[in-house]
Image (cartoon, rainbow, N blue to C red; front, side, top):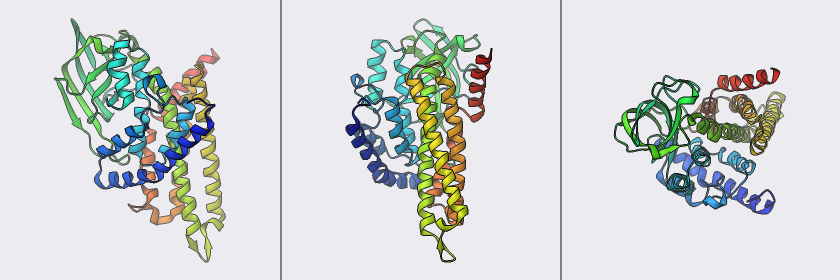
Length: 382
């Protein structure tokens, strides 16, 4: 779908919004009650085509541009955080695999993932490493096989996936030049999969702690050459994903604002609705400006990434940094507008408030984003 398909895209956007506000809320209630994502949600999202929106038509995707997809992601992000997490990950991880995939690997990994038949978990984070170049999980080559050892944690869908897109390094190397990207079967021998404890928000999304001890991975499952691991991780997934996370902040903030406005209209104190109180009205006005500013920066970063611009990495970090801080302010004011009742479980704003905290960690903390931005601007000065 091209940018010229205005009517078709508008119809799709209305369809997504109706799903989010209807069945999406029913799924949200189930997830909050059971603390688990029901399998039928995955099937429903796949059958509706929502897991392949951003993939090209020749791969079986909807062929949306990145900016079109982000406009839909904003809508999905108004729903439960686990629902938007599924949409976000499935519409992004194919890029990381595809950029260096051979034709054979594309048939084995990329196309099934786009179709929703292969669930892939992005597997970078480690308990004893930071930004990626200090990876400690390592592989030793033995003929046509890598033997993988080390740990990963906080791996979203790492328990329920079919494969891990995993990043490690050649044993004995340091820095980014020794890194490799591997497709690792979820049921490979030599790995212990430990489900992690429930999170404060984003309930229902499973996270894994993985311990590998000489787990065999075919060399044929390596994406790109040895030394290209972080290129696969950062350029193929993290840059557009950071922009995506920024838009999920916009969507969740939009939902918080909706809830705050609706409550302020209903709630009457001393004979007047809260909307007649200047303190509340001004807070809602500040929220509206905050949300729109973050939305426009995010879309600008997306357009620069689509154009292959050199400043896309820095802009992706700027968008995520600004959007996360915006979401913190908006959800705090939205909860305050509800008064004490908003703090109780079962209140929609309570769930939004909990879920919002997670975005501060996704695809790198604010401190990491500042590091990326500072590196870029200081390089320009030189």
